Length: 471
Ligand SMILES: NC(=O)c1ccc[n+]([C@@H]2O[C@H](COP(=O)([O-])OP(=O)(O)OC[C@H]3O[C@@H](n4cnc5c(N)ncnc54)[C@H](O)[C@@H]3O)[C@@H](O)[C@H]2O)c1
Image 1: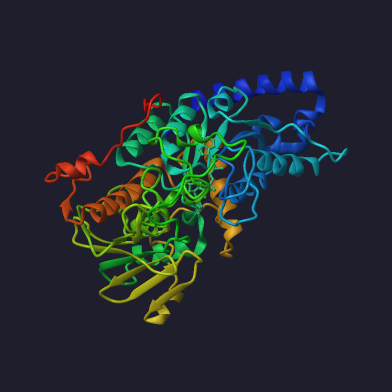
Image 2: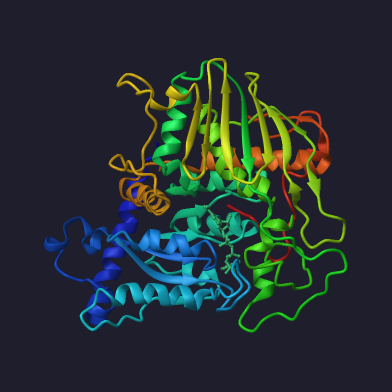
């Protein structure tokens, strides 16, 4: 646990000053529910967390309501390099910064007597949003090639960060994020929300408390690509109006525009992502590491296990079929593969347990499922101790709530940066084994392969000018 009370006090003091000035200057319109603190209690403006959203695409549809549902949140601004348009997951879906701004304004409008609210600001450039001293925390919901740059810039600017999984694009970027969290004494939640699922937690507790005997093997599954993507010979397309494509590419290499390069499908292209191995692996392998009590380390050996890629020249370059094997220092084997539904399965000397991301659990013998965890046994952290029902929207909201509470009490949340980094590293290294189609050993403490220099070269990527990662 890291306490950072001095910075926190400074940040609350700065915000109280801002609120005083803003409320005096603009009246009650600036903050929709400005009433005396004595009435609001814990949700008083002085306890309110002012949030900026960076990235207004597919996942922002879950993240925005998961923040807005909490009364002590004020979403002050949104940011996206795309003004508004189609091309996201569903063909007719119109997303981008103007859509997100509208959601936020409509939410607060419902809370005013006039039924009107238009004060959520919108930015193209995240650096302008980060300059605002009234913003306490940011939610980063952009493609993976941007996570480290934006998160570190945010922390340097004194913001706490909720950053979507997978933590980073490379092992090096993840390590820099870990260093920045500790250097700037910020609160950082990795957006791997299944840590906040009651059923996932219970599955991990059953494993941790030995109900399956000694664990020998863990199998993790990741869903296949949801889209086929254009094959070799694909043609560049005109950049849509209102979309700053060069800014979207940012640190990634220059490349001809195609709608399927951007807007959700970027996750199938190696310049911006490590594919489903990491996209869903950031959940299923995270559950594996949590249950094994290995969530601050990684396996020590990685090997391709029959992964497949699309033909050369296809737009999508990540593995179309995930298959890698890893081994922990204690001998436990981890097999990660593509399957229609993402899940994690533990195989022990006395039983087996499978948990899906949807939260359904199967055990063999069946009665393991009903086993009660005694008061003196291992109990894992809970985002919301009162929550028993495993409902997806509650999981997302509880994961955000856990972050907000951490922002207030200045203690690490349920998925701190080191844990997000270990899970992402595991998946990234599995992906490297798939690309190289060979076995290598790994030193988790040194974060290097002792025997494979090519692997070590793949731990970082050169950023396109003028973008540079510096803490
Ligand atoms: N936790 C989960 O279950 C879950 C589910 C889906 C996605 N995600 C994560 O959410 C993130 C976003 O995924 P998505 O599916 O929403 O992608 P998306 O492409 O639908 O949306 C990303 C948005 O970010 C914008 N953007 C890109 N670069 C930007 C920049 N520099 N500044 C501001 N905006 C920028 C894009 O224009 C786009 O609107 C990814 O990290 C992904 O892994 C998490």
